[in-house]
Image (cartoon, helix red, strand yellow):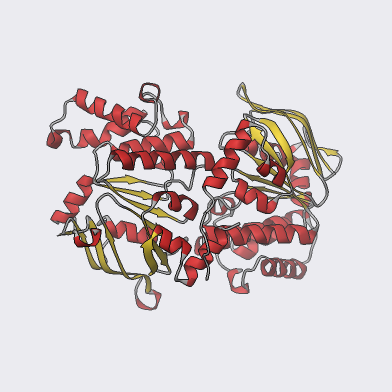
Length: 261
Length: 261
């Protein structure tokens, strides 16, 4: 098992944000967390990444390849995060450092967590940019000079450059337009599969989920209310919250006949 | 039939350049459109298509080559008759309600602000202002008594966007312009807001709506006509059904391809 979450609870200033959540991600598996805004799904990923606000109290267990993450120190956590986990967030312009060039940005995790020569780093960065479909001339640019889609490609390259075993993607395409969204999703699943990593993917949209994840958990009020094969959840949702999410995704799917001739 | 009437808002051969010298780039190229009373026109395009620039030009906030007319009068500069009529008769809704609403103001204060600005011209008493504001909140499906005293931070994204819509309709505008109103909302909230817009249009059959969006799933439920913008050029324009089921441009076909399952 890559990731095992057991009885996870998160409390922030007296409010229970995550309640007794348990789920697992097997090696190489792509697993989804789906829920509306405010359901607590992002807090679960923040707890896994050790990025919760300071006043948060975490109970329960999060194990990454058997190693307990709850209660380990900040330094140890930063080290694990850098070498075993990769994270991609919703808004690339917020998650990229505005004063670093693309090449500096992508090589930063390598500099912090690996002992590589400058040449080796450069080589790795170049091949990573190539994998995410960015031209070499982008390397010297700053985030502000890139489109949203290009920025998210840089964020993916930064998250994957250390060949992490677990990748956490929190609404990575919500801020992008439809065509860019589709290409980023396909790129991410393809790279994750190729590297053999596992993926924990957070979204509010079943349409995206069914393209990415084999198995999914539905989160509501900080609780896992339903889980299983994504297609089964889509076809036979049991809980009213799941039914609502499926209905919304279907309503918002484009219904047209015979286009594209 | 509608083609014989004078359009409420018309843009003719709009071109726009940014920068100068060798930096000069064209962001809009000969864009024309017509919006009729009671109809909903969707301007569809990805990031960088020029749609936000077009919106600013339509609102008279930016100069361009070509002409914009509102109710037959030229919109050119802040003192033109067209501009003044347009700005006093248009309601605006933006992507992110949390940045478009003042965080220090209660919902009632935000919604009533446009009326208070025009109180003298409209000859409205404080009591009338309050009544109309509460009615606008009810019209967008908010429990006015409950929400009047709430601040944006006490609202979900969907609720906050409803407050922003209430503020846009409180002056009973003849033209509503919504720039990506659903993009920051989750799918359930999007579905609810679509229903709200449908009800608003039923209740105010003369009001025209411009919906700027990259989301064809939303557009199919709201628009009568679609104008597809890509690289600053109109790729095609037609009825919603026509454009979605028989797209003529390669870009529209790519867009449809990206959102089909």
